Amino acid sequence: MSGETIATAHWRALDREGEDTCRLSRLDNGWMLVGHARFRDAQGRAALDYVIRCGADWLTQSADITGSHAGAEVALRLARNGADWVMNDTPQPQVAGAEDIDLRFTPATNLMPLRRLPEVGRLVTRAAWLRLPGPRLDALTQSYTRERGGLVGYVAEETDFSTQLSVDEHGFVTLYPGLWELDHGG
Image (cartoon, rainbow, N blue to C red; front, side, top):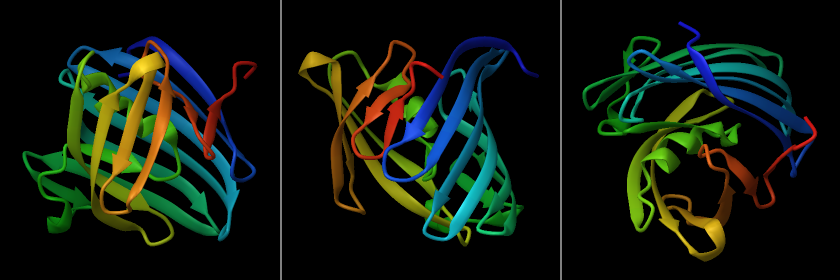
């Protein structure tokens, strides 16, 4: 199940104490991200591990998130069946139609839409956006637009957030201004 490793990334948080390490692997029927996020936020310390499985088309199929956040244990399984999503087997109709999972605590989940983004053009996608504590799962409409100088314009519609992302040849974010930076030494 581990597959062939295609790329790895190690980010450091710019807005708090924290880091995230992620590995991208090719599977027989798609792709898998395996990551380990360690950080401190306003709620306290977090040690979260995640496994995200995508089809060959880079659409998210499932995500498992385990560990702890602010002293509470986290054990979540998010899965997509067609247009429908469940979280720990409970239907999540508010995110029906979402193509991706967005884990708020890591830049790794930008990878899937960035891999689908055309060389010239724009991609609009709907993500199931996981926030902790909670857990809370909401729909988040995201757009990615290739810009000059290798940058990608990013907009999250429901939060009215926008920025320019720097991205490497594998699709990993190398700079998420104010939030994450690829640690080339890590």
